[in-house]
Amino acid sequence: MAVLVTGGAGYIGSHMVWELLDHGEEVVVLDRLSTGFDWAVAEAADLVVGDIADQALVEEIIARRNVDAIIHFAGSIVVPESVSDPLGYYLNNTVNSRALIESAVRGGVKNFIFSSTAAVYGTPEESPVNEQAPLRPESPYGTSKLMTEIMLRDTALAHDLRYTALRYFNVSGADPQMRTGQSTRGATHLIKVACETATGKRASMDVFGDDYPTRDGTCERDFIHVSDLVNAHYLALERLRAGGESLVANCGYGRGSTVLEVIEAVKRVSAVDFPVKVSGRRAGDAVAIVSRPDLCKAELGWTPRYNDLELIITHALGWEKQLAVRNRL
Image (cartoon, rainbow, N blue to C red; front, side, top):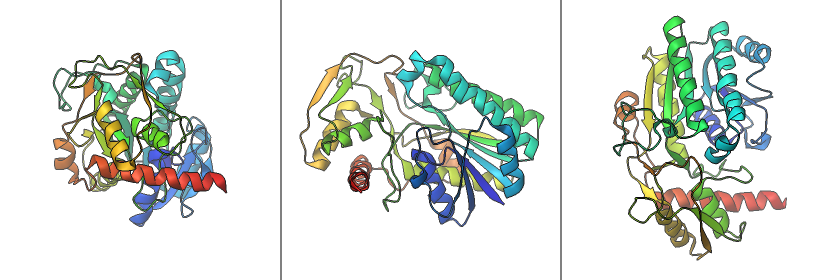
């Protein structure tokens, strides 16, 4: 049996591939390499360059590799970009996910794990937020992910398919062994941008809004180490294979940090006092969102190993140095 990882050449997907291989799984990656990199895929995995919307290709992979589980990361993830290009996001995140789910059903794949997002909540009325909170996405990105959750729910009721949708909070850091990390060009992730600025790859960085109703006026987020996140996916896979029912769960630490707190932490860890500019608010940004991860811990037996902001930043900075060496080769 094999696990099909869509978007496995990207940031989180490439970490997932290593997590699966570390557990002795057979892995096939499907990625069109629009934002991912072929070199980011572990050599022991089989990389197929293609699109999840190509149902003939997907169904051929499922049959040829005896795929029993799909872990779905492929999609677009930039909130402000989704505001300016909603149709692109509904195509890539929702329409293409529908095609993938249909291919899974046709191919008899029984286990499906979906990369969802805390953006489905918008700005919640209570924080930390649990899975019973109202779903009020404030961007097409969040809505596109929620629509896929709904498709999975309805498909699981009609077919022999069980799923887990993990609602990510702010994923950061890099593989502690430096095998992979966040390599996307022009990335918008806060810790990635701050680390690029600290290492001289950017002249300065922007803070988008300092007049929010938070303790220092900047947005507040729950930052989770990417290695802890992919470990939750592996535990979700084990649970589904053991007959577990479908599940939607938050994946975060339950601790919030503001934008300015993160920037100060990056300056402290890197020992670089880089320039920071305050700009206007970005469309689609929620004010503050912190997870309540109790369900994930209880159902998956998940125990985070890297729940420390400075450790996350240390790994992220280490990866920036790795990338600098790679780009000089």
